[in-house]
Every structure is written in C-alpha cells, then in structure tokens.
Image (cartoon, rainbow, N blue to C red):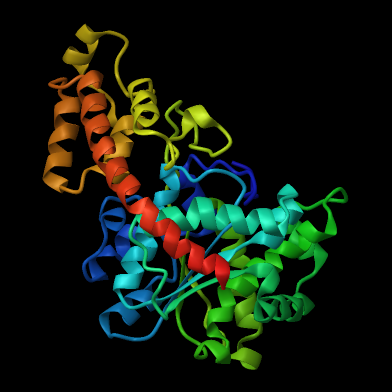
Length: 367
C-alpha cells in the first residue's frame, strides 16, 4: 500500500496494514462498552475507529452528540451504501442529531456534476432509498443540506483554510500541478461539514461521530488537526470516526456504482438482483467433490458477505451457515438460493415503501 489514500479512487484491501500504517484503532477494543451495539459493530464490519471513547461516554451517560456524514452523488445507490443508512438509523435511535451533506461542490470539482444534477440524484436516488430503508428524515434533529447553499459551512471552510498550506494538502491527498483549484478546496468543505455541527448556531461544541469507509480517513485526519488548531477560537472537540469494510463486489472486486456487474443496485428489479446473485463469484472450490472434502471459503465469498452485511440478522443462523460451508455440508448453490430468497424479501419490502418515500422526499425538494 502506498503512503497515501485517495478519497476519490482508493480501493482498500489490507485492513490490518491500513490500521498499522495510519494509526486507526481496532474497533473490537471498544465494542463491549457500547450499549446495544449494532450487528455492523459486533460482526467486525466496522473494524476501526478514531477516538470513539468520546461517543461511548455520550451513549452511556445520555450526553448530547451528533452524527455527520455526506454523499457525493455520482451514480446509482447500491447495496454496499446501505451500511451508511444502517449506521445513521442506529445513531438516530440513540437520540443523536443527524447531519447529512450533499457534497455538490465536491461533485462538481471532482466529477463535473452540476448543482441541479447533484440535488436531483441525491434526493431521487439516495434519499428515497434512505427513507425506504427506515431513516426518519422528518425529525427535527435531521439536517439535510447542499454544501453550496450552506453559508455556515462555506464560511467555516474559508476560515479554516487560513491554517492549511498547499504543501500540507499535497502531502495528504497527493495533489499536483495538474489538480484544479476547486478540487484542492473541496477537502476544506469536508472539514467544515464535519465541524459545523459544533458551531454555536447548532448548539455549540459536542462530540461528533463520522461513520466512513477507510478511504475517507485523510479527511478525518485533516479535520482532527484543524479542530485542535481552532479549539481556542471555536471550542471545537476533535471529531471521532468509525471505519467500515467495503463490500466485495459480485465479481470479486470492490463493489462500485460505476461497475454494474459488481453491484446490486437498490432500484434493480427483483429478477435482475436475483440473477446477479446467481452468477456471483463465491468462495467455492474448483469441483463439487473438492468442496465437500475441503469445505468452502466463506471469507472469500461475496454471497456469504451479502448474508453477513445485510440479509441474516440471527447470529446463530449465520454461524451455522458458516460452519456448514467450512465443512462442506452446503455448496455454493445452496447459499445462492438462500441469499436470493432473502434478497427478494428485502427488495419486496423496499418496493412497498418506496412510493411513500418518494412523497416524503418530494417535500424535501420543495423546501
């Protein structure tokens, strides 16, 4: 792995090396301190953290805290994105304020997507699915905004830029002479997104948790550095972060919106979603005979991962599926059939809820 992580194109595979190289702490060291920890936490899908002790303190002592995340709408929402929604839902149940940024300025700078495209894609593709999956966007403590229309974020980004040099940005992000200036500026907007829940207008300094994939850690490190530098002026508390594993794509690589064969999109028809499952790469052996003798390899299987991340809530059932795979009692066809049936249930439920979700999302469009 290089000494640099690219938030706009990185594919992290060696999580152990990542934690060792960049100082991300093992999440299993704090999971026992979390009341009613989620499946993503207990199953190791959330594998690392920075300074999560501030959040466990807030959770255990009913202290105020906020959860902040963002989206750069550039493609269709796939099932791997559901991890973020599941985390937001969990924190919302824990009475956290939820801040969700639509990073339209970043989308324009990095991908050339204009503001109207960003808003429409964010609402109609992402927010509709967020609502259908169970996130309550009608609560007073849910805050959705466009970067380009949030003056507090833009003003804060300008202010904190005073203590960031181009040399620092280049060392963190690898920017060079070919990088456009708007792109160089967007990390400051990310920092402002993360810090602005602590502004006086939003209740003042408080712990903030940012659930992200490991490719976003450069933003977390920069934010924590700048929070410390502006502590005297704003009282900022260095934000905390958790890091979740990327879902393996159905083709064996990282699941990506830009690679249709690798991803199950949440707006796929049930027929298409099941077809993708049936043709997915598994951890099976070269022959049925070998599979029964040596067992399967669930840790290399995209279907087993689909079950772990999204489709099986019962830990005992999941453990039995794993054991049966390892001992060769079940073969890949059995697991694909199981996953297909569970996915069909999930998609039927999503489809039933999407019409109402579209109506709720429309009210956001009208604001």
